[in-house]
Image: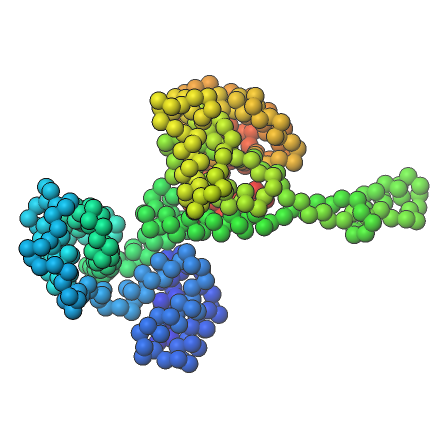
Length: 449
């Protein structure tokens, strides 16, 4: 068992989890103390001792299933009393359905678990897993089962039990695909875990489930940054001796001063100005970065966020949104409206990025926000669409601020290709960094504070 748990921990590390030796020892002690006979208790013990971050739950559950569970749990509804007979199936939403779709829909409405599993397993047996991701394979299965038609019919009839059954069946299909990949591919296990590793995964390549996990990570990073302070030395009545002043006095008089001056640490939060490109090519990156900004703005008193495409406006984060995602979506929607409604009060009138114009407008409208204590962060791919770069305006922004940091989601080898002018702008930046994964974002964040 010791070797199995050590290998399991190594698999979790492959998925991006941080597992310390002490945690492996804790897991082994817990299993020795409580035993491994009860499958549920075995799962809970490993999760309690090895999982530190809730955002890693998906990776843990995937590795646990593949390591310790031989087959997925089937959907079994045969013991339930049918809600209707074969001639009493609701017809709402079934218009245009094929015979197979109607049969699939009828099985769900009648709660016929056996027929459902027969259809699911037949679709699985015909599935070709060659060089395809789990998400893509699941989509192929859904298409073959007329899943989306059935889902729409259940939505129209407000059949909550049917939707729950469909969700359980989706879980079964996903887990069956994972098992099939492992059985038919020698390196399948490693591929599945690597695919779930969010650490170095491009934001633009995330699946819907991974987006939710990434949002949790970014929210935690934002709170961590918001709680960090910088410390500066200021004259005080106590603290460390101001050696510069003491040496200066000594050189002037020929002997040390009888009374020393002191420097004390003063806690200070930085002033941040964030310029975020929300054009089409930047949409997914902007969304994640704005979530980080939103989490930080909850605690920072001096943080200003501006959104731009070919015009720049101040971001207006709503205060009554239920979730961070809703707040960000509402902010972007307000700034970037459909073409027919665009005005100078929005971040674009054309929908095409123009960095030179944006920097010029920023200095015209918001230059008073810059100061020698300000850190300016620009998130953008620097694709200017061949408009004039107005690099002197960016130089002015850099000169008026303490630091200018440019975060670019494009791979560094793509900078200065086609309409990208990153190299032209980078000469005025304190840092110009590639930022397209959570690891890179965390590294960049350490330079901000």
